[in-house]
Length: 309
Image 1: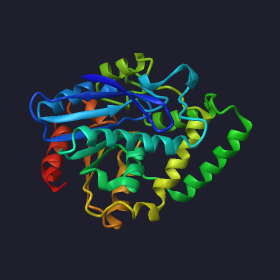
Image 2 (image 1 turned 90 degrees about the vertical axis):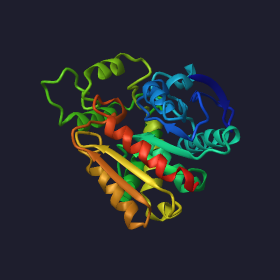
Image 3 (image 1 turned 30 degrees about the vertical axis):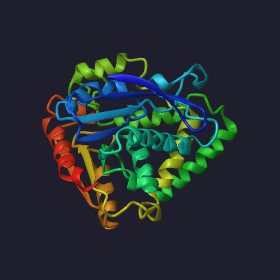
């Protein structure tokens, strides 16, 4: 694995990761991680893809993982202004870099959780730049509710320090996700994975599970409003293949129901979408002990569409 820095349009330096193949690759997976993790958590997955001659590139987004700096504070903070737009353009810049050095390879974008929201926003603006879109445990959002939440967050930014931990909102978010938690399990957040060793590793990682600042919540609200508007989703090219994967035991997507709603939204728009729900798997599909079928579906998806790009 190779780590390297890339400068974004506004001068921000982001840490990127590349897992090269020993032979000529057949495709590239561009990973857009969730906001509660970093690219180092994808090492096992990337090494597995290498065995299938698939090159993996990913980025620790601004305010996350090794791209964090002291000015970000102790909470997740994207930027003072237009944080969401800058996140989307960061993903585009990385995509452009991949095309520069791997111009002859199809690029499949994989977004996990809120990273899937970013991948969706990217596909609305730049769907012609990728050969396929893979969304893992990504939720659908109601436009009306998203708009109300954005107005609420705009008011909060007037009252509170934008870099501060949004404790009230973070607590609501955690209680909602943990409400189906089995008290007999080892950790409160074991809804993440059936593998408690992974959850322990996640909990002990200082770069994981950071709290969202008021500013970050507002930026996410901007993104939710953007991707929940049907007229925006109509800009996604109809021939872009999309694979939605969700765990049937994932609290974040309400046991896969919110991912299924996203599938229905896309199919109504005439998008080429497939939906896979794995009944006995949780949130971090790639970190489940029995994830062979998840990996197999990704490989089949890439093999099916890599020559269409």
